[in-house]
Image (cartoon, rainbow, N blue to C red; front, side):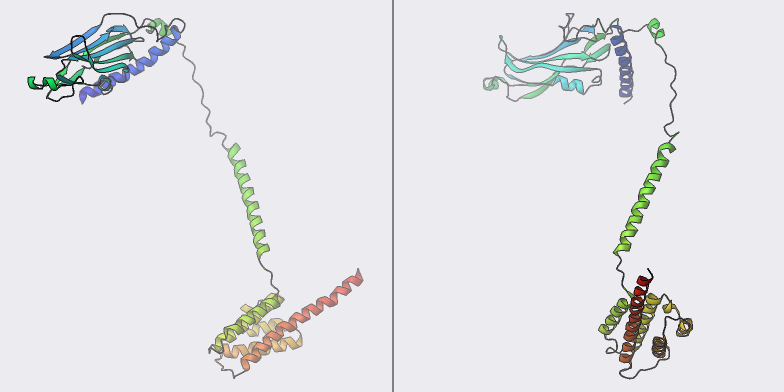
Length: 372
């Protein structure tokens, strides 16, 4: 593990150097650089070969020393007799799995398997193009194959492709070294480094220094929209509420009380509680007097001098409330039919006070017309 970590750190250093040299290379030789697709230059080839009986494997690089901006050709070749089954390892895969895969790459040019040769052997070939990213000395991995050889009795059964099986063996070449040289234009000397201009520092403006110029108006706008939406919603709720006149409300409550048949069920005291609450609620809606919160004595004292309560309705109301209190608080047991009279009294009080209100309105209307 220690060796692997050391080599990776060297690779990081080479990537950094590549970025600097590449920038200088583009700056100094933008007019004189040769295109990368021109024919590769000739040079001295480096070859490694391994042989074991009827099998031979060769690894060849041409040229073995070249500028890192140019490309070399790598050839892997295996030759064997026809009675030998050969499995040539994929050289490109071995490079990808190696430690220098980020410093150069291989591009496959051609590949052939079990091709007959003039001397009656079979040949396997892989050819690649190598492109270097950084200058330096590289050790390319060995070329490998596995083979199996048949016995003398089995030679006649071997097909041209060499698919028969036998005892398997491995054969590999030595690793091969290639030197990718840095070009003169890519080398920056001390004089060039001194010419690099250092720009003055740039003051960074705090993006939050004037945040309030945008935030406060936006917040006020959102608050105003929310207020308008709330007022509109309240207005819609108000319009949706059904306005029921006081006498109509009392009629509905009395009808619901009759439908519940509390007397028939023996719930006499609950009946008197409800009929009393209906009349008190009607008075509150009709006259604005908080009758539900008052006792009978407090209510009679408050309405004694109120001109809106005429002598007749006031007397009936007093008798009504007193009869309800006897059952509610004194445990009085009303005789049969008394609850019906009480119910009739409550309904008549509601209708009488409603009629008085309508009559008062009808009398005031022509008077207003005469004045105008």
